Length: 91
Image 1 (cartoon, rainbow, N blue to C red):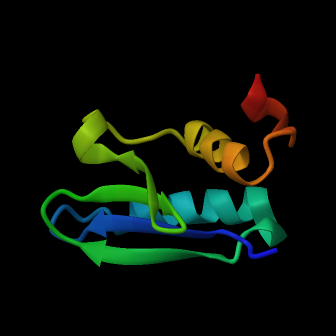
Image 2: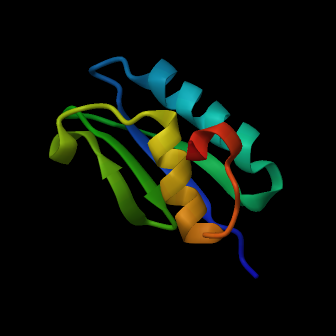
C-alpha cells in the first residue's frame, strides 16, 4: 500500500518557512513511518496550504488563520488510519 505524501506550500514573501518547517517536524514526529514524506514547497501570494497526495486539507486563504498541529494531525490520521489513537491530541 502506498504511503501518503504530505505537501506544505508556504509563502516566501510572508516568510512562512519556519512555520512550515515546524509543521513538517510535528507531522514527521507523529506519523514517523506512516508517511512517504513531507515536502515543503515555496509559493507566493500569502499561500499556506497543506495537502495529502495533492488533495487540499487546509488553506490559510480559506480559513483566514493558521492551523494548529493538533487539527492537521487529526485530518491526516482520519485519512490514513481512522482508528489510530493520537493520544493527548484526541482529547
